[in-house]
Image (cartoon, rainbow, N blue to C red; front, top):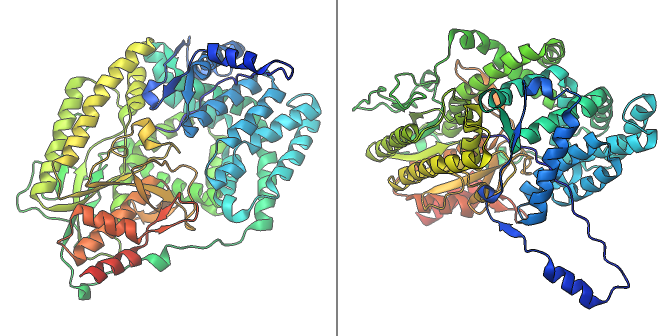
Length: 621
């Protein structure tokens, strides 16, 4: 569940002499050392950067340029010595290179990097939008001879408007509106609050930042120094573009939806939500009641952060977190309206609040938001999974996957204990005839590295990588064995939200190749890829993962985005198919889902279609 990080590098340039004989060029190529081929994220080298004091103070300090230059030198070495074919990883590298160049004042070089960054994009929206904000800043800096002052801002507005104006609305709508919303709430307090929340723990515990953490800090420096002063100008340009082009785009999902009723002669289907828990009171008549209760109760299994049995079906909140929850729900709606360019009272309240908060207040809010966002996650997935299916019976499988946010360091004993919990869940799925399981989560080795960094893993990056790899190997094995041990259960997992290849990252469970597992990518209301959705060989189908409405604990309905929302949409279809034909195996169910999906002309997306899949089922009965 780790967020996508920024990375940096410096491009190597080769100049061929037109008059040099061909043999000379061949000899030079032959003498160049071969690059090491990178096939997975863990093959990349690791670095560590000591930071004195706090990252929050350091990011605004005068000595930051030397820090960024050192990080850049290390990445230069990586690019010179490694062949990295994964486009998402190269995009991270180039994004961070761009940041380093802007900090150094290398505007012309940075413009070349923007072009290379754009060339790495494969999604239509990303191809259109990537780098436009930075490019307009850089062009304006060259025009005005610096990155401040009225002439600079006027030049920025001109270049940015010229870049945005010709973009195809149907392709860029979501990205444009999201950028507009972010520009309206951007603030120094938000940036510094994020550094305090995410990076200061690593500095305090390990005395250093790892590569990814350093890249994040460099990105924050660029935002503070160069992007924030242009937030109003950027919002003005985007608002004008939205006003001129804001027309509805097609919505494909309603026409594909199947709603079952008792007249369809349904068989009850047990559907587990392996997640943060479920507010079971919200689903009367659709919650599984076990005649053989567990230590947690009669609706499934729940485990606390230490792997012990819990009797709470939702993630437990402190008194302070409970008090913050109503405002959190209102802020979700306000953020969503901002993202959609809607000037609702909730949106205006969020905008006003964010612009008046201090960095420490932002930090406190972000700490609450992480817990509360996790708290609502399982219930939101559950509402999607059982929609339109009176035969669905929800089973709770609760645990905490917020690994880097745990206050204790990971150990083999802890991983083995949680692994035993996973096996207990799988045994429960098998013995209680759970037919479909939603897994809207995922982890990779880098997440364990971050966890170690934030809990005192030390500044030795190589040692931390080795230990993380050992822990992750146990974690991966436990998840894979659990899924394998319930062969009659279909497991559906989110592809991930880092716009990466799940296989390259080694994300688990999304990267696993198992006959009873399917990974799901996210598209929007029109079936276009979201900017965040990950991809890869295991991602066999795509579903709605953008602003999907469902319940959160307490009964409110909110819209959330992510492959976390796309996955239960596929669970929804799987459970409907099994309710209609309980003899279906996981392999048969996957085939019906995949064969019923409509492939896009570019072959990148396989859009789920409930009606087509149900029709295929009816045709074979």
